[in-house]
Image (cartoon, rainbow, N blue to C red; front, side, top):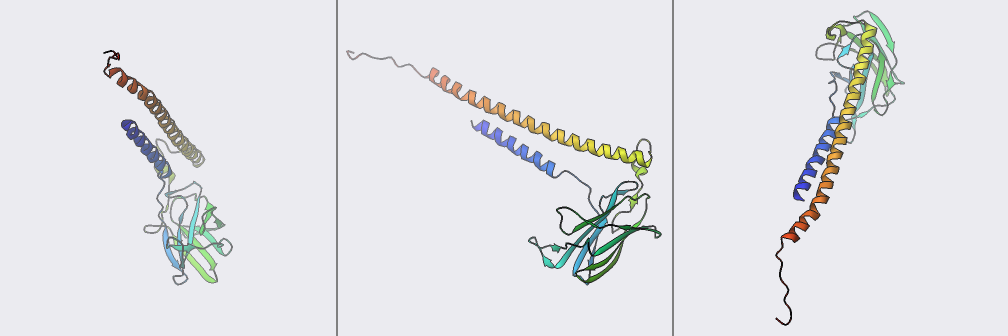
Length: 231
């Protein structure tokens, strides 16, 4: 039984490790610029929603604002909510063309905002954010580049073996992403089923082995002859 218990603990630990790997599945590491606003009262973190950013792929402004004068339970700046009503944003490319963006809240993520658009050319992009935060005037420009957040890259640079058009590559990228998610889900599902079957098999083996051992012990015990009272 000791061997069974050790084996069962090992299987449980393996299952927990697999679950942790699923939760901590690798994702893109974001490079964002942090900047103090309103004389240090607030902090803005700005970058692309999806990094690295590629041309002809849906992306957008990623904006997080925290109040540094107030702290949450973890000691971080308190998220500032409601800024979709008081802030405006626009994006410009190469110091020329400019397009207004619609700032939206991100569900279940207080203090985080998004403004979606599709960059159609590789290069440097600038986000212009203006308006006010609790009566404090805001007028800031955040330009992509080294030490700040990533420029938009050409998707053709990572296409192999043949470069494709924007529409085709977009469909291919989405299909690949869907396949990857499906394969990951299937893999973890099969691993869970395998662990379950192993556990059931070990349980059945333990139940069957215990009475066999008891019978063997009785069979090996010496037979003591009975004596009559007359003897």
